[in-house]
Amino acid sequence: MNNGQSTINNEEWLEVGTITSPQGLKGELRVYPNSDFPERFTQAGTRWLQHPDTSAITTVQLRGGRYLAGKNLYVIKLEGVEDRDRAEELRNYKLLVSKSDRPKLDKDEYHVADLVGLEVYHQATGENIGVVIDMYSAGNDLLEVKLHQQPETTKAAKRDLSQISRRSKRKKYRPKPNKPITIFVPFVKEIVPVVDLDHQRLEISPPDGLIDIHETE
Image (cartoon, rainbow, N blue to C red; front, side):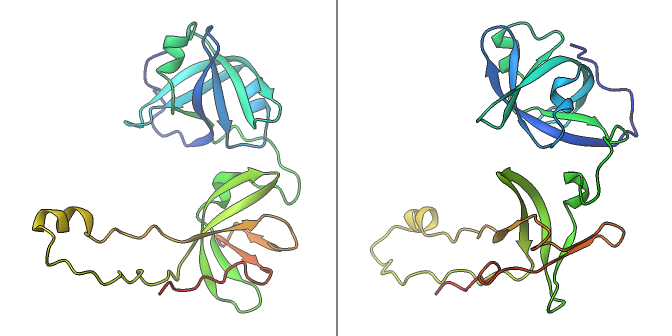
């Protein structure tokens, strides 16, 4: 394994997976894929690793890999990673490929990186609903969309705080920021009929209830 940082400063990268844990005792690694192309994990050649904290990128050589049926994981072998201790050090690293090294796609196929960031419009009303922030494979591909219109902050229940110390009030009853509401949209032609990469948008025709988010009282 080459521990030196990549000398390609202006390279653009595609994230294809995340190392989740060691596999066995001989330095193999489990990878959760973020790519529909098996060759990213099975075909030997140059790959890159991104440090989970510093984002530093280093070059590695992939010797090969295999798919773990039923677990949606790949097991890969990297040059220079020969034991479990070294493999453990790579937990949570991102596996990258060069953005220029893209497999050819068939019609109506897209790279995940091209979908993330697209604005999402309701085809019938023209309303800008949200933005794509991720995609997951769970039998069918699902687009995670962060809604532009978020519900109001939940109203806190009234409490008698007169007998609670100031310190306890600060710790226990400090308002917590709400996590943004997202929805999952099946990435199928019937529900996502239009994907327009040139204009950075897609249109959805959602079934009833998919985007109905109600404010909490």
